[in-house]
Length: 374
Image 1 (cartoon, rainbow, N blue to C red):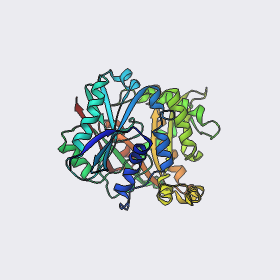
Image 2 (image 1 turned 60 degrees about the horizontal axis):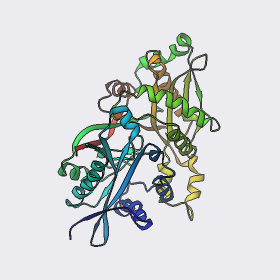
Image 3 (image 1 turned 30 degrees about the vertical axis):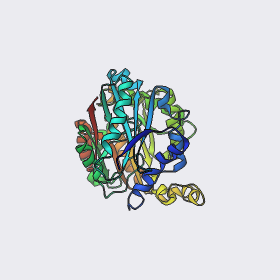
Image 4 (image 1 turned 120 degrees about the horizontal axis):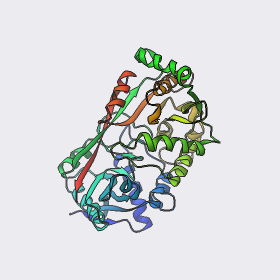
């Protein structure tokens, strides 16, 4: 039977939207089921900060009374302010392996975006580039880290068949952060000069000051990333939600701020213990026993995702980035977390890619963001 795409319009539809990936990927040995409760909350207009500066519509693809695919269409006024209007996004892409599912899903998203005055569509992203984004191209055999999507190989094939064009690729680097021998010697030399020459020191964030430190993070991010492809600045409501989200995974060892002697923020590094190692055991549910694994997370997690390491323009030649890299290696020597992944990093960000190579990193995953004219 043919595929019919309809907008999500009821609680039952919302439940089907959330449940689809559990059905599609439950037999995968590496897919990590997110908490169902968290996914429902993430989609609520009252809870997700996207809806304070944008809008979205969810769609389901049905065949013979059964859901076989899903997609979202959204736009972000923060993106418009940075890059100009006319661009919409699609995301939350999930589908069974059949060639006739993705084209009507994309057309439903495109039609909704055209009605919002959009002429171009990029994605997937859930809902923004600061959330899960891209279609997995390499690294299918690896268990995803926190905030990383996972797809079977046919997703990329279906995207290509549907006529989506490459916009940009995103890299994830593996770093064995307890092995200092892999770092080029120049990194240590640069790190040693930071405090003596530039009077910059590194402090740890605290749980109590986390929301305030998110403002410092945003000051660095909104400046250092402003020229990057797809960049969208963080708003106050974004930061409120971001700080609340990080309370669940916060580990003081890995949240760092580099400051001058007069208290100005020069750089920030946010590295997240990989809660996915816990979620895998929780199997998407808090009850009846999922909460036990969450309480034991500090004994379970042995890897981290270096999600953000940025330096303000005025301090990019001081060696402060090198100091933060070395601090990560020192931290790994005294904590259970001995390795991790860094990124994502744009394929066009040549300086950061060279820095990862200097740290002994290797690309282990690649994601692709697609685009389509509407």
